[in-house]
Length: 380
Image (cartoon, rainbow, N blue to C red; front, side):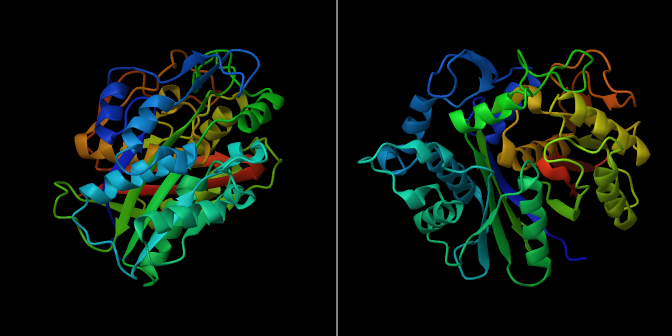
């Protein structure tokens, strides 16, 4: 199998505008989830992880006029710019592809008042991807992956397969989503939101916390000489159990099948598993069943949702980047909010930061409609 390398990752969340800033806050047990009062999102106070608008505009002002870009676009452009600035790989050519991973994109522009700067096409995901593509001068038509909450992992799988198929040498993957009234009201209608910061896999968990963020990574056929410890992407698989429009399979069948397909190709077990871990009663239970069925119940498992909240289409990219950081530095963060086992198939949930010596991790994700995805990362 052709080696595909990961280089120059970036994370933008309320915890910081670089991967290093986010890692430092996470290891310190700091969460970006706060109680907010914003009538534009909810008539009542709500817990969420939101990026400060003033900081966003200040950071973006060195790249362009903030008024010419939406909130979503500013986050994505900032993240991609940081990656391009820090990579040692030449990516401006016809062998480079840009993939945008998101669930809702510029959905906040849907309710823009007539006469404003927003145009009807600005809401379309393909249009947003093209605007970002043109900003950076990428030559090829971008691809949009919008597949519920596995979008980020699916984008990584898609990029890896396109490189292995010989279509491209480099793929830039950005995952971004923002929290809006549309997003908040949708999850609220499902009664899936937590009354406070979420508590993945915990006995007292009562729902998820929403979050916004942007993450970018480069997949490449060549090593980045600036990377001290090269990281490679393994196989990736996605399945759909078609169980319910929003509820996951009670048997974990779809996720179990995805994990099984990967372990058939990669029989060596990972040092840890980065779970989806939304802190909803059904998701965490389903993941525990699938992981146990795969025989991985003793492997350390963590969820990062307690730090950033659920960042939707960005989650798979953000959490993969943090998992890569963990592999390189040999440290897996605690599952913030977890204190007492709350799933019927007990897992080895990280209660505090732990050291890992095995240079491989598994990243899993699940989403509405019964979709599931899994991939692996290894450090050399």
